[in-house]
Image (cartoon, rainbow over all chains, first blue to last red; front, side):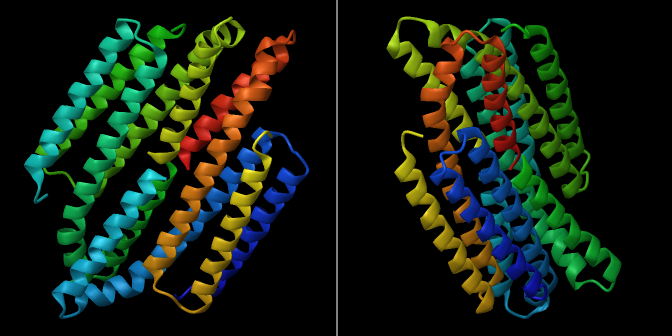
Length: 90
Length: 90
Length: 90
Length: 90
């Protein structure tokens, strides 16, 4: 990935966020506050997926679409669609 | 779009579904049943978007990525990412 | 529903939006523009579901929770959770 | 929360999953595989939120709705709606 360090950094922060949520649970925090923090983690993960996809589109996808292997191209295009389908479902 | 008729047909069915929901509201149906039907419409719309995206990836995107216009290619790749971002948010 | 007319009006507008999308498909509009309009319809449907849920929480749910029928109360609370689960998935 | 231990356990597992994703990034795994793992984490988080909500509905919400404080009741019902709205958006 071309934006490797940014992704690694964001994942590290998100892991810290998730550990904070575990402390909230241990401290018996208010349920709705915990749910809100979980939703914030999910929004961060959406952002991270988007950035990984950006890198993927601008490298692997371009290579596959310009390459001579139709099976590889179809695989890469199908993966984009699957990732979109799952994003719409979670 | 290469799957034009299928998309048109699915949208027509979804419109009928939405009219059915309006009748439920007029008939004072149970709130939760109405919400469930709205969620079913949203799932149908996800499916339709996925099929349009499939057609797009296998035509416009291939043309743009193989073409000689870097601005057009960047535009098409950015659009994929934006559509993914919005899918993750709704 | 206490906000019956507002819901009916919003559904009517959304149906018009969906018919507009069908015209876009018939006119062979750009795939990504069609997907964006579908996503706008989904956002409207989210808003409508939210308003129906608001009415439901402030009427049926209060009645069920205050009532003497534990089975009815459990049913209503379970429905809220199911609606939430489906919302998280679409 | 009445299902405290189950929630804590699931969060711990999800944290481990997220650390695995960081190793994938460090090992330069395939972008799409990383995105899929992130989406799996998001699905786990949906499940955790749902379980916390279940506990909340069956305790805090019942107490608030049966209680004598209208402001507290309105607050709790509004929170449910907000959590639903955010779930529909991420």
